[in-house]
Image (cartoon, rainbow, N blue to C red):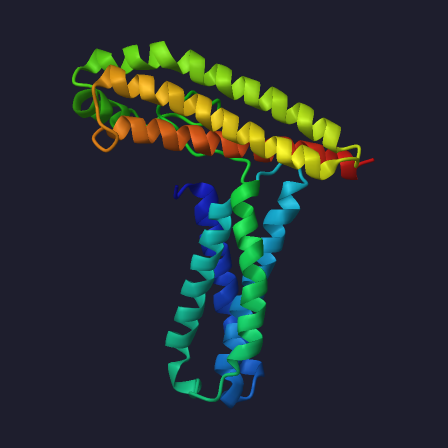
Length: 256
């Protein structure tokens, strides 16, 4: 979760907030320093959000919700350090919160939208992932605590993984077809409804498999962390694959 890419986002925006915060304090009347610092934070966060949306239309980049979160954390840290360094020169002064609140409320839908446009999946342990390497320690914990024997995890994976991957492949194929038809501009809302129906149908298929896995493990719904892991990974992968297909279709439409 805190990889090189996330560190870059965090420290870049922390540095930007620190530098711009000092400039804002230096150029502003002392009584308005706090107001300007808040605007620096809001402005930087908006820049970070728009950059994530820009990456959605770039085949070489991935849009990630967590990138925006680390941007926000970096901005917060940078402004906190600015206040600490210039504590004596920043009077309390009056702050007009209404315009800031309006801008933040406008940014919240943009932030929430990134949840649906995140096209890069996290590292997985149960599912194969071309770029990410599973954390072997986590796998070993599940082998010993969740399945009762080291070989049980691999047996469970061997038995059910092909079925889950087949469901994924069918989902990608059918979603790609629906997006292709929706590109024509006719009956768009009908195809959006069909996409929602497809999502629900895939969820039902997955939960049928999960029930069989649960039976095989002799576990209750709350007792086995492996099942929760598989469910979380499957839903996240489905969301990422949908975002990838939407991204590809959007780029094809706008590139015409």
